Amino acid sequence: MNDEKMDIGSTALVLIDLQNFNTTRELAPHPADRVVGNCVLLADEMRNRGGMVVFVRVLMGELLALPADNPMKKPGTPEPPPEAIQFSPDAQVQATDIVVTKRQWGAFYGTNLEQLLRRRGIDTIILGGIATNFGVESTARAAFDQGFALVFAEDAMSSMQAEAHEFACQNTFKVMGKVRSTRALIDAFQAGTGDA
Image (cartoon, rainbow, N blue to C red):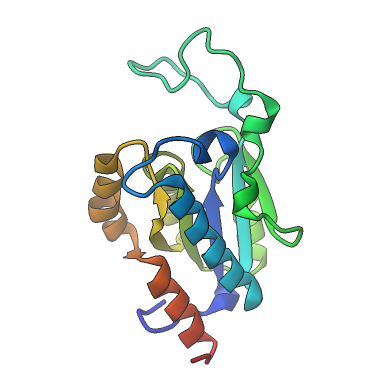
């Protein structure tokens, strides 16, 4: 991918954990409604041009929990209700989209995501979702190790702390790939397909 255009045929949009338990959180620096709205814009553009759209969800009740100083799930925490792990209706997941289910932060380990991408000839992944420094970053690190080019939709992801999001976007992600706005990516889609 260059900054002017993008080949939709070899690019996949992978959106992480746009589930109710995440989209109802207080997020920073971008609020959840803006993140989801930008993810929808990107997904619509990809679908309209025949691109691959992947929604990743985590099964919270099966999420790996190892000893930690500050675990995400405190001992004795009840399991989330079934509606909490459903995709947010605002994410507008379509029947033609691919859904990948994971049981850890990253979307590659223990899933068929790599196989789905390779069979479609995908070499570039655009990432968005919640949370920047957990599911998105874990997925990005695995994708980078497997040789996928990475593009990060900065305003289509967010975290629980603005500092965590900004550190990942300004430091880690710029070493691994390209960090762009939703608008810049849509412009690149249009340039890549010959549209105005």
